[in-house]
Amino acid sequence: RLAEIIPQLFTDDQAEQLANFKTLEQTQRLHILEALRLSNGQISGEGGAARLLGMNDKTLYSKMKKLKIERLDYLETGK
Image (cartoon, rainbow, N blue to C red):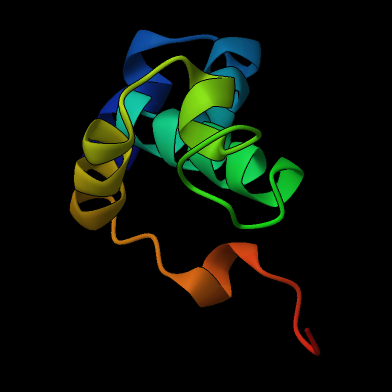
């Protein structure tokens, strides 16, 4: 339905930008995944993703559950 409305409301350039626009939830998921990769999958403690993100580790666990982030999403295969 939104795809039908977008061409009527926006120029082609704006519609293309909107097509690539991520929701806040998608952006949070990607940012958390990057922090988990940078911390080699460590969530809490010194060098953990929670510290990198500036949040409590329990908060990060909660966000990971909400965003359906699992170990296979951020750990390299073969490790």
